Image 1 (tube, rainbow, N blue to C red):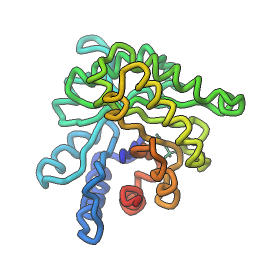
Image 2: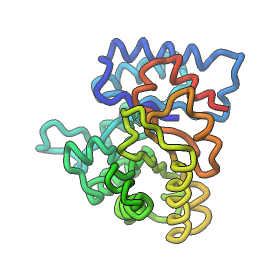
Image 3: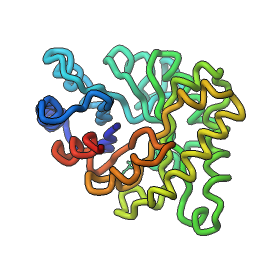
Image 4: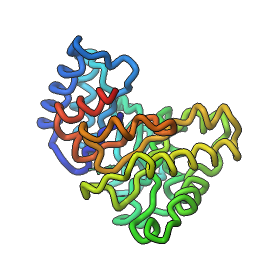
Length: 251
Ligand code: PEP
């Protein structure tokens, strides 16, 4: 379960949220043993989150919302994979629809970022998903699989087995308009089948496919019940410790 904070919470607020989350997750009444919990704060919060997680041995992992396609040099405003890895990030979100839309990121760019993240020892969370017009035209599977093909180009079967793909229908992100569990399953299953065709069973079975789009504690169970949904990428609902831990306690 990964919580994408987007451009919310400064480094002090980040510390408060991670402390609350870790405290809730340590509640012995619930068994979170099967669930890997990841927070994805803004870059400016990462050092504080690292200090807290390391210092208190918290069972929360963390990642970044983006990474540069470049290694170092004259790229003002960019953050390299080596910098994120040095901060202890386990994951990097690449190709979020807000980056694809607001920063014109293509599958080629997303693919380059995913390669940089993996080469630096982090797991890319590769986001794909269709907009409303594509969904209304019934083209969601073909559209999303084209993004998967482009974004995962050049990875070996062994590498794909360790990746995370997040299916996030753009019309369901931040809108309160959650896809039905069957909608989520349809595309998540198609993603896994495409990986099976291209890379074989081990890659398809190892790949973790997340659903994202207005997931809340109240609707997560139906989504997680679907066979090809391995977890969720959560935006707004990850900003509250109680709500996010409720999502992590989906069963
Ligand atoms: C997201 O940012 O990836 C997301 C799914 O947002 P929300 O949960 O707010 O729809």
